[in-house]
Image (cartoon, rainbow, N blue to C red):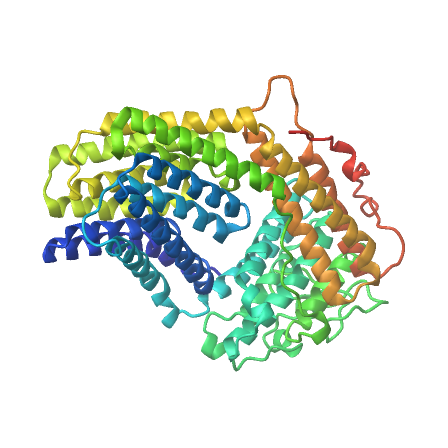
Length: 621
């Protein structure tokens, strides 16, 4: 079942980055239009930072919004600089910071657009660009457009591969979770399944709301609906806590081979109904599953199936294991996975708990204050071209991107490494083409770092920016100054953030945990009377919000806190809620009315979970 698709994808992003950054510079050198080429290179640099392997529609939308916001910011900063009044530049930066902060906590695309609006103002007001006022914004848009073209072109020949890989990952994660059932790593494996389902749900979001015509999108949608039901069955089996034999843990992989064949052209002629497994000897009966009839349903009076099974599989399973609702549901789903009923179609995943208006206002004001202080320090230290300080503030102060303290440390470390790297290159050569080659190499490094580690991304970005500034004619020895500027900007952000909003991460964690626990309780209370589609929506919303809450809690614990003040034990409450959802899934499959069985079946005793909110305390800013 393993494909080699992920390896080319891992190479494609840095390769696109190298081409997108080097191409404008080469054209500029060959044509003599170096200044517009460098501005296009800055647009490509920012575009590379937002490139990815997500669906092409989302990718183009994110890059397009980012490019428009950056061009607008560049134009505003350029006009403020041309006004000739330092106060106009400072005012423009503060207004841009307020606008960026106001939109940044409204979602991923809004956050990216807000950050690049501020970055555009920073560059436009800090680097004087000759030529007409409209030339630099258009050049910047051209650089972003190049990244969009390079990123979206593979859509022509691998149109639905991203969706296919995301859905396939769910089946693999389900198999891994079944293999871990009954072991200490079972809950972690189930969380990885939740993450795979969340990713697939996001990738398939457009197809869920507006189905795409064609055989391949229809088969992907059907496979995704089955994957959602498989997640429920897997959660129930994980909760039952019994080790499962290999031929049971391989059921998701067999389903994936049938629903998502590697040769999609050949796979379209294969049967997808209940007879598909029987045709190749991989059905429940062929596996020797007791209590399974020809169409995958349970045989109530059977506890064993006589006769040898296929080579490598046991001919029988002990009666108690064969009678679990999870096992019966798994093989029934396997047998009927080719049929998607209209009343079981999965809805789009609900959005998680967002930031409050007070949070957005506070962040906008703090960001504006940090930018103002950074700009005043830059004017005092460097005069009118001190853009590095406010630019670093724009990059660092992104609490929605992770812990601010860790981001600041990684920014400083990456800047030091980037300065050392580009300084070593300049010691070896100062040739134009050699520097362009260095831009391509460091751009590829940045593209890898964006997905791996922020310090690595900062290393590549710092080196690229130094070369671009050199091509713009700024040959000042700024290596030490840029390290000090980065450290000063990080210090400004940290002091302002932890002095004026010290509990921001804790507040987000508390809010998201509360919303997640409420979703888990809704699933418990409403699932017995809900139809299949509503039940799956309730379950997916609960697990999705619990996963978001777990990440928010981890971020909160990564931030330094006040001495002697302990954070609530959100992880314990979230783990309890996850086990509750597992138990609800098991009850749903058993079809038995009544309260959720919080204890596992006999022989697999577990501690009764505490009250969901018992581990939570009030969080005050």
